[in-house]
Length: 301
Image (tube, helix red, strand yellow):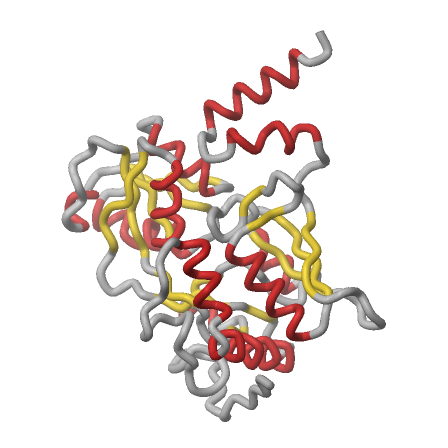
């Protein structure tokens, strides 16, 4: 009798989240998803702290061993080891990550954060370590989206607090869109599968990954002209941290680490002109607020 509530919860969540159903046994038996520790063994320095959205596969998502796994976790494990620091990664809703960092809870964010002019005006960013484009995912059997006009009058699901939510808000009046914003990407995908939303708008890597794990969901239309840096933000008063991270990221590009992690998690080797391989001049994404044109002094020996 004691197992019946747990079984009912497992069945309910499996119906709502096909992407996470296989993980529920472990997650229900363990404490709530909270922290993952990576990097070098603890020394005299305190651990660095960062955060991710732990439901954003394949960048960060629950691990059967506890905590989270994914491209972001492997990348920042490599960054922390090169820095000689231990790194504690918290999992939380994306919409709260930037406010928490600005309040001093985190040294930087390990989540993939899209660099926009608005964000660059209030945060410092490293250069991008991967490109992202805005892509729609639709339910299998839905006619393909060929242009923005095909979205007219439709409901679009997004992960709350993201540029995808902002795109829908900015175009809601022009295209008569209905915004459905969720605290997690699996919820946004599920809204499409259940027919509550016509399409989900997210980053291309996430949409493609969701499609490989959910047969009823397929990757579709990419919005033209929406290539952005996915980069690491820090507070505006912490240029030293931004520069240290930038130098480390450039070293991991030069030795092929980021390209290997990209191939592992996204299923294809990056091209020579992809951000996983390209080192950009100066500190931060060029031509945006917060950019420092000084030569990067990366010591990669």
